[in-house]
Length: 156
Image 1 (cartoon, rainbow, N blue to C red):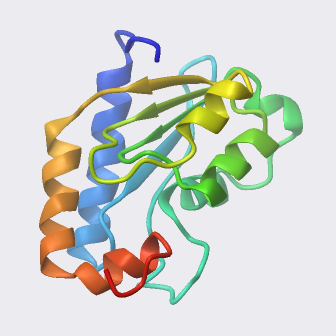
Image 2 (cartoon, helix red, strand yellow):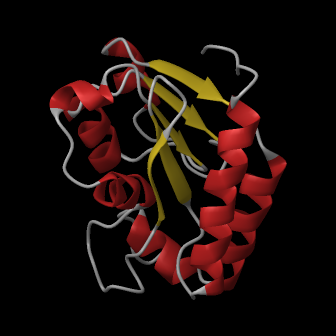
């Protein structure tokens, strides 16, 4: 795994703010921010599965939705900041749009498609951020059924 850059903490803080917003809304506290190679925020969002009764609105998908329809070249060199290791669905979207870098807040709670991303040439960075970890752990303890449903392991 690659090392964080100077700007990674700033954008991860924005992703964590999105995660907190999701928690405050009664949803799963995972946030994401899509940032262009030039450092411009293209989209930001948080997990909305509970709020919108959606099977697919994970934080990364929400950030892509927020970015709206962009030409393919807009994703060149982009970074997806996400407070948690991206699941298989979100990993697939990252690969589909050729996003070249993923910075995750943590992967102690859940390990997603990191190896797949790396095998496809995507730079993967783990910030090991305690704020991301603590917020999600609070949710997992409070609502284990909703957490299990989110990661496809209902009943956990």
